[in-house]
Length: 514
Image (cartoon, rainbow, N blue to C red; front, side, top):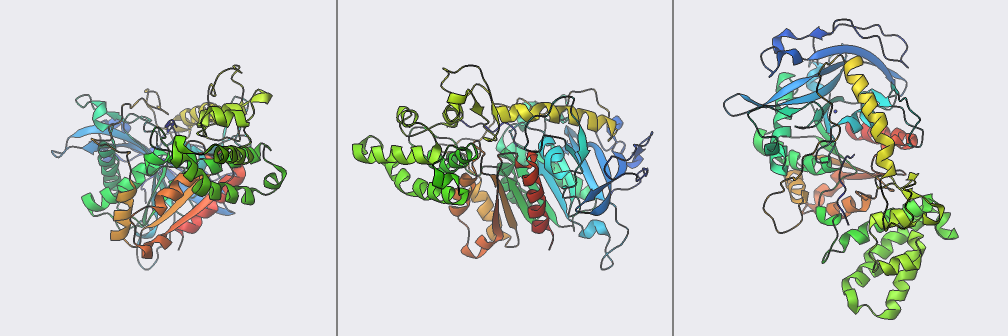
């Protein structure tokens, strides 16, 4: 099974107030955005001093006024010189009242957000789910006709937490300085060091050490978030309140199949079942009840299917026949496809074959979405319709938004997806895993909560892979209650599906608010 982690899955002072007009449209931007002159000289390029604008958005019927700060922060060497500049967009709610004599900056939660890749900017979570503005997709998350547009995000989580969207080095506008080699940042340990240093410095400059702190990561960002929880605690003594893990992976052994590792084929089976049910390819009893279909798929995957794969070529012929029949029932595929793939159906094959007779291929990141690759004889899907659906709208929206509404100017291209391969996972003879790190920090910080969000039709990071990883972590039983799960109908970027976006906002707000 191929590792397809490409995306995915971003109290401020002295801002010029904008008119708070129609909450369904952005307030007018100031002609000369406020510049914090005290920041000059603290960042690599004084022209990138923070730019702050004020706006309003209505979330769950509540009018929220916020300051958007866009800028760069340096990653510092031990001697205090800069080795890279990291681009960020931060949103802070404007509130006048204090609680218990403390300033709001000391009590209001702040959530640090990023996507994955490795090599992805934070644009997907930023303009797709969490920020006060979002890309206008079709309601089901399919591609709208260009030109594209932005809308106020009535399902932002800015009502519950301030937000900081981080673009790791080489993504967005973030770049290494001339003297530094970019690939010095391209590895799991180097990545934790650079993103962790950004979080420390932002927290320090904005006086948020006493605020509740959360980290939200998507895709490889989940692997990063789990490592960061331990890194921040061990390096800086920074204890987090919670992790929001969106469509991700903790153990690459759960998604990277091959000789000797059949686990991914077992864990992806419920995702195949959900996709087949969406496209009406299951038997009548399963088609009528998704819950029943998923329960049967999971029971089979953990039982008879695991046993069959474990036996390999020693599997008796009659048992193999029964396994094939059950896989046909749970996936909607033809028996010949399952036989030809030796019971081990790769996602690309599933995406090509489920609707083959209709000339359609399925999305990898969201198997609900379909396209046509024009090659009926190809063994696998020629491209990913789900990726194709989001790339254009998000690219246009971010390039317009950052320069137009946020007033941040830079002539560099905004890198949505940067080339950061090869990625250094260190010397190892096993699959990369962050499960032990997450368990370690949870055992040492018993207040750390985890919210796992996953889409049933995600064929890149199937939701059952996260359940498996959590169930197999070396975590004290007393702390397992700190982990909660929520499943969604769509795929990897479940938030592009409007009903799922609504549910996602409710789940995260409930998680953050006491």
